Amino acid sequence: MVWDKIDGGSFRFDGDLMEALFGYVATNRKSPTRNNNSSNPTSPNSQVVILDARKSQNTAIVLKSLALSRKELLDALLESKELNADTLEKLTRIAPTVEEQSKILDFDGDPTRLADAESFHYHILKAVPSAYTRLNALLFRSNYDSDILHLKETLRTLELGSKELRNRGLLLKLLEAILKAGNRMNAGTARGNAQAFNLTALRKLSDVKSVDGKTTLLHFVVEEVVRSEGKRCVINRNHSLSRSSSRNSNGSIPSENSTSKGEREKEYMMLGLPVVGGISAEFSNVKKAATIDYDAFAGTCSALSARAAEIRELVSQCAADGGGGGFLKEMKGFLEAAEEELKALRQEQIKVMELVKKTTEYYQAGAAKQQRAHPLQLFVIIKDFLGMVDQVCVEIARNMQRRRTSISGIGSSSPKSPAVRAVRFPNLPEHFLTDKSRSTSSESDSDS
View 1 (cartoon, rainbow, N blue to C red):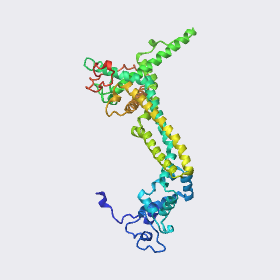
View 2 (cartoon, helix red, strand yellow):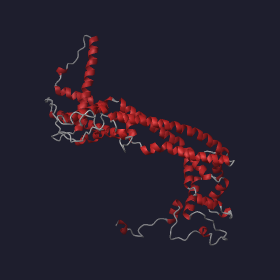
View 3 (cartoon, helix red, strand yellow):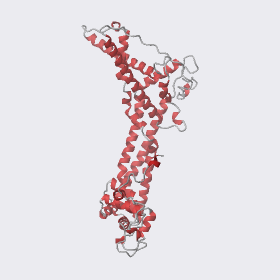
View 4 (cartoon, rainbow, N blue to C red):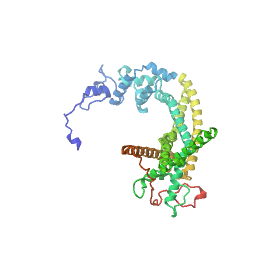
């Protein structure tokens, strides 16, 4: 193995530097004098270490990096004075366990002989026995606004993403074209009259190739929609010109008969590509919704509510003990506002997920009730499909550019415009476009 080639003397660390940076204690060194306090308790230079030696040393390093005085910390614990989130995070990471706290508080020797970490914990716990529970509460309060903001943004993304899927017409045109293409390919079979199809089939459109193997079903469908959109642009333009010319008798409208069929097809493609190309840009919230970690999102309200309940117990305990001071007052006010906001957000989350469910049913009836169905699967499927369509449009534009370059290189002679190539596809494999999304009224129709 590679490890067999490692020579023990080929590379060496600077042990002193590593210990200073990371609290590393080499195993071949004798324990520091301060760790021998139990065997020589009367030594005037010995320090008392209660925690694990490495944990004690690492804690001391963290405390030095904070440059935080005990007074500043006590002000935060007793009066709820602000500490930045990074400081609170580090303090909670070095918090001793309940058992370690008991050992430190039970120390009845000379406090000046305690090692740095133990001395810090000792004086803080003597002043505020619930110090580390309070630190957790302060950290929760410090992170609360960003956690809530993230939750609200997620809810907003899902709401807007659902609306995008209900309001955008071009996506429905693409789905209509795919459905009709599937029915056309399966004409004469039991699956040739479907009224819907399972959207998971969108990811497999590139797998179906034409008989000559030169194009895929996805390319064919996208080209047809591009051509259709381009033709619609020409019709609208001519209609606009017609209205303008009716007000100006000198105006003239170019007739379609004055251009060849090939030129018209080229114009349709040129006008339709900007309409269809970049379609995914119109679904920015759908794409963002597809990246949401649903489990984390679904559990956010519950997790925040659970943390708030823990702090509520701490506040109650402080009130019962007759202490708390400014910390108690500040936390009470924070909790009242947080609990009210979390209650409203839980209702908003239910409302938004109901909208997501309805949108899923809009595209695929019964999908939301399927066991193990991912609640946000629709967004993922549509995001992938729209990305595929964008890529096909890029390839169509690139091919058109190559053809223009090729024609310009031939010379000044004007070649005949090629006729539109007929594309033939085999019948779709069975279950390729399995129809599991039709409404109850169409359940008797065949699969596409």
